[in-house]
Image 1 (cartoon, rainbow, N blue to C red):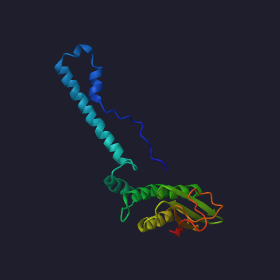
Image 2: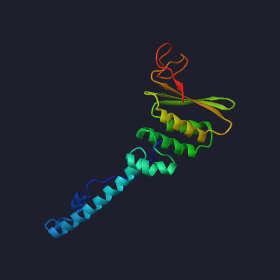
Image 3: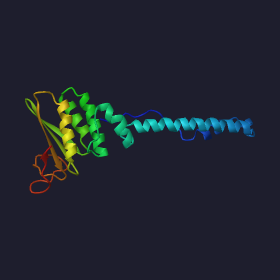
Image 4: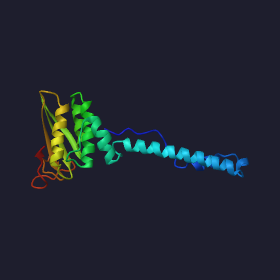
Length: 194
């Protein structure tokens, strides 16, 4: 799930642009120049404040305080024992889970949104099951595992069984697996159920 981007362009030099566009007959008028500088500085203050608000409200770029005070309450999540990056992932996952319709694609997109960057995928076991995998550089924290279990319970429909499996890079796996993190027999780490 990607973060929406703004179409606004930040202008860092309003005062200089206004002075550059000033008619040449006013170059020797200190009153006009002072007025235009004041207007340019005011517009610059407004531009800076507006972009500070926009940047602080974006999930990927907002401050940790904004994350806890703005995003967390909106999706019904508290930070608890999570780190900042784990909390961002849980908020992304919760947004996806709230909109999940129980389809294979929505369950997988929620899983990918909630897990840290790495390799995340699912395997469907018909008629009513999933195995959700994530392969990370570092093992997930206990707090993160608990929150992932709670989160996936929201979006997986009733009557569907699922397991979440975590692996660390490089992981022990079968030769038929096409993962770039596959180490093979006798090499790499074992995964575990989340």
